[in-house]
Length: 194
Length: 387
Image 1 (cartoon, rainbow over the protein chains, first blue to last red):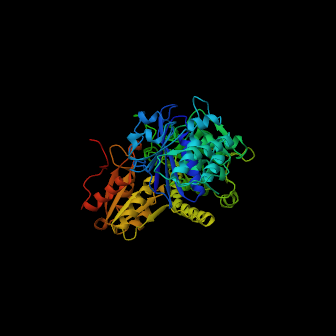
Image 2 (image 1 turned 60 degrees about the vertical axis):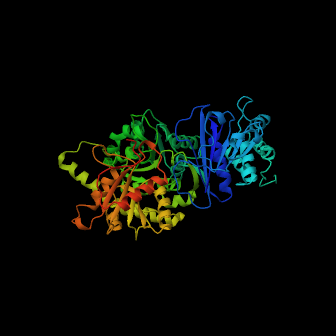
Image 3 (image 1 turned 90 degrees about the vertical axis):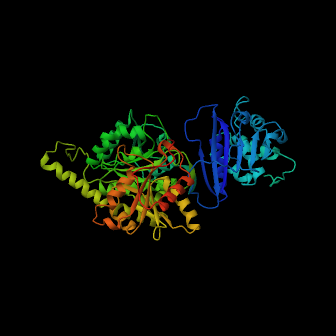
């Protein structure tokens, strides 16, 4: 079983991202379970969403304490919350930032990847410049680095799950897929692009 | 068609497939998305039902009662304080023999104010004459809405289906949505023998003197006694239709089990995962899932647990001054049958009140405790209590 945690701020679309990722994996015949932080959400406050992926029916229904990988939608969260809490050694941590992976030297226990999802989202007119909606872009990058799911499935899921600006969301996701940066010694599992 | 869907929307789609005529509901976390989705389906013309916005849960149930008495298929959903506010009319709707279906999202009662899962809200309504079913996953949630109407309308009694707050209500997983045509064959339009009809008037809710009231109560109980068999058949027939059969209680790895977990709701799902782990190690742990709680499936429980030595009941609820509620009910079913010497030891665990997370390790601890102890020593075994 693979367990993933997405960190974001209320209103950034972490929950929708978890649902799109779950739907994309479902298209590849995986069993999936996704859920938000149980409780009340406030715009701007740190939130999290979770995904479980397995080859068989998922029975466990507790919280996720030891994620295999983590996605961080907002770079300011790196200092605000412990985004690596419970993260398995060697797990991916994908951060929405303009900085390069090697700049996150305190995260050396993990595989760091970065992508300027905010810049990409703004370029494609998703949200506003101050509050870009980055959830679809970052999933393209996540598909690339982990190889868990094909970009095509992510794009298909975006088309189904996002109610507006479908084309812009799809293009943003593709661009993030192309431009995600990893540390030089990490070989990306998929160089193909649709 | 399979879809990744949250538990709340599984309820909404179940109601839609049941072709409900009237929906009356008041929003409350964590149930709100159920009626939000239904109101959208009505507004979009995808569901031909009257959506009545009301000012309270009491009014929601009152509206459902009126609709049901007039011959309509009525639906509502609520949770926690909302269900508590409805309490008076829960008695009224069952006494009125109205086959209303309600989804209750299990949420703790305040204060302390809490929106997370706990079973006490629905279990506290156990004496109201409503049937109750507890669901383990989102698929079962959708299917149970449909089966609930099948059962309710045969018995002329209301049915409550129950799902855990957040763990199901807000969790997305794969749900197979049956074809409308198949459900139409399973659940024909509701045609009551007696209804409010200006062309054929009857008196409803009239004064009943002691001469007759006693017998009316007897008849309600007599109908409850028939409910397990009606529900079993409804689940069997549903299984033939969509390939997913349901029973009122469901055993898992029970036959040779040295320790049997008895649970309801998503605790069942976690328990299955733990049982699989123990079985791989050769430790014989089994499960009895309580789907139906009211009427209590006493006969089946006695049959399935006959000869068992140790039972661990997991309650995410409490009856203050007594014990966990499933624990009480199970003891009541198994004891007093003049089988004292052969009766199992029953261990009552209380866990996860107010939505405290229940992990697989917690369930394993319950199993280990039950395996190790020779005899049950206390009525409540508190799990994870910070003392």
